[in-house]
Each structure stands twice: as C-alpha cells, then as structure tokens.
Length: 81
Image 1 (cartoon, rainbow, N blue to C red):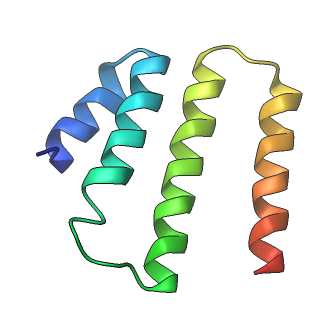
Image 2 (cartoon, rainbow, N blue to C red):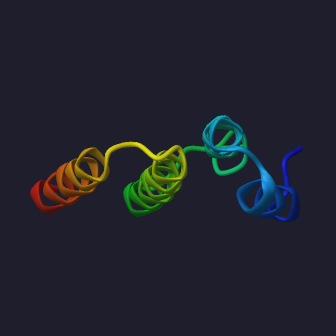
Image 3 (spheres, rainbow, N blue to C red):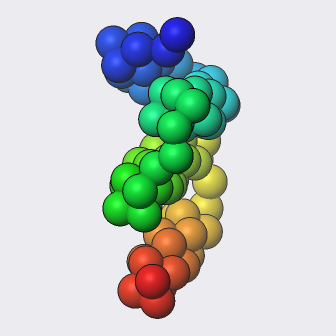
C-alpha cells in the first residue's frame, strides 16, 4: 500500500511524470480504501490532486499561462460548488 512517507519522497525527488502518476495512484488507492467519501472529503482529495498536478506541470516547464489558466479554472469550479 502507498503510504505518506513514500508519497512525500516521490514528490520531492521524482520526475514530473512520476509525480503525476504517483499522485493519481495515491488518490485512487489511499483515500477510498473501500469506503465512500463524504462531499467534503471528496473535495479535499480533488484539491490535493489538482495542486500536485499543477506543481508537476510547472516542473515540466509548461507555459506559465497554461498553469495559471488551469489554476483559475479550478478556482472557478470550486466557487460554483
């Protein structure tokens, strides 16, 4: 099972693509663990996933405007909910 220590190590030392794939695995496997999430917990998981994805994209040297646009669209979707 993925634990918080291995998650932190990959986020500090892994390549950007490894960070994205590891974050996807962590979001899918750890928080759910066979039980359903409350709405607040699901929002928290989505926020964590979006944050780490944006950080990984910035590490890939993706256009800064694209990263800002992704962040802005995430913020707008959070305001709607």
